[in-house]
Image 1: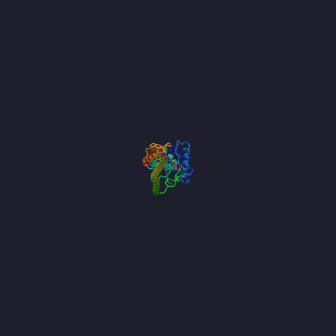
Image 2: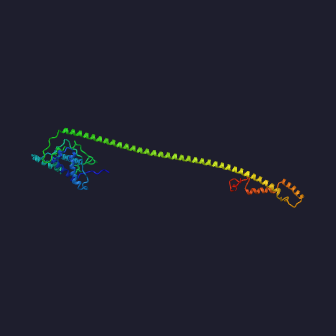
Length: 380
């Protein structure tokens, strides 16, 4: 959205003309050497009379540059109307200078109702060699306003008036040339040709300065764009570097995790193998111990049965009795020797019963696995 255009109201224009005429009449303008010193009090007077009193009706705060540009445009407009009156010849009856002045005033009012007001402020300012070039359209455009609220203070088309617009010191008119009311006419100006050449040189110089300013602005804009691209590139590179580091960290973490799992699997397999080997060794040792114990038990039981078979009564041959004769004893002794040399049937039955009770047997007859029957106590 384009910024709001600054526009002078009729009341502000009237206050501007009154203050300017007052300072021109008392000689303040001729004593001040710079435009800023000349127009700063004028702008302050207009702002104090209108903007400070009613900001809603007068929203714009005018600077000394705005006031100088407005006065410059007003003077150009006045000179345009004055130039249009030159081709008109005064009536033959107007021989006196006062009558000619009155006739010029009447003709000016017929063309522009505010001609007398502007003439009273700017006096009989001399006409330039060429048509003045005001900041905007001519005096009699179809859309021009007649009155103090003229649209002659606008800058270039689409531009903003005031703060962004400044008239060079050499291009502005000389305030010493302005003749207030009842003042003597100024001295004659230099030849027209010199003024036109000077204006052409100043216009060229102004265009060159404008072009240089545009080039500087373009260079600054290019530098800002380059700096912005460099910042974006740096940020993008930093993001890519962080993403690459993150991916590398993930890959490294995954590799370490796989390596740890492989190491743990190897340790687990090694432990299982070691435990299986220990179990096999333990089982072999236990089987050897059980075999030795069984062998010793069988030996002891065999010796015990041998002793018992000699002294205890036999279920086959009968026991020893105290009342028997020698023949009977001899017969029993003879039969005892025969029974001792033959296998006794109940001996194998007794051994099987002992094996069943004690749970002792060779390794090939045992059931695999460590059950509660394998736990036994061996006395040293």
